[in-house]
Length: 279
Image 1 (cartoon, rainbow, N blue to C red):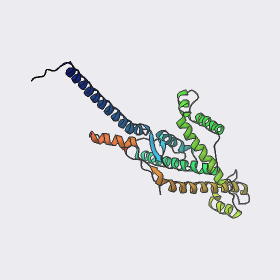
Image 2 (image 1 turned 180 degrees about the vertical axis):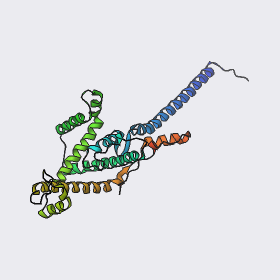
Image 3 (image 1 turned 45 degrees about the vertical axis):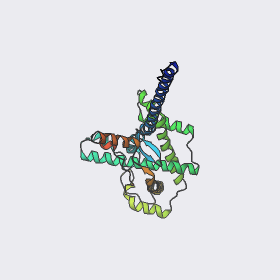
Image 4 (image 1 turned 30 degrees about the horizontal axis):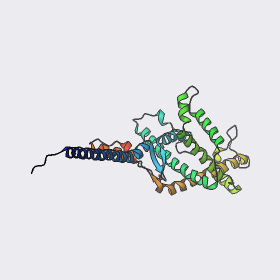
């Protein structure tokens, strides 16, 4: 006996079709959300690390900090590249390229040291006050931007550059604290004079005796001793921190993978940054 499909059967088919459509839509929507979530998980670290040069104990050091340090080191009397002017050389000249490479290496090292000094300063209770930092920022802007360059002044006052200037201020405060109790003995003064006696002359160019130059010698010998203590401490901090430094970033890793997948030659700028103690 044949049974014809009635209205109920037709309605049931429609409901089932709608349920299947809703299920399909839910699966598609969930898949889209999942893909978006995975993309976000991958993309966020990549984007965040785009302007990171390297990490010190998981803390990012930005490309802007590195560039600023390369500019500032030639004006720092404690730098090996004090008074160096690579900007005046021929960029294609191997000597200029060697100078630039060395300057970049020291800039990386100094930033590592400053981050370590910042940690040590916090441990010792050495703090740069907000007002002192404001003063340091304004002094930095005055030294690095012409009065009519408002755009550069704004950049130098940005949060990232303010953090960079704070590193300098903290480093200076830490090193002043490190050497505040330093003194020189008479024997140390004589030893210093024995090495640098040629540098002590009167206005007529006549060589001075130890007694005649004693005041200057005391000042210079003390400054030299403080300088040597600072250099020794920097070396120790660099060797201590080097194992906590990473020269690679998520952005570089992703871009290297991207270039390799599409047969593009990977540029040197995407390779992990080489960081060493220079010893």
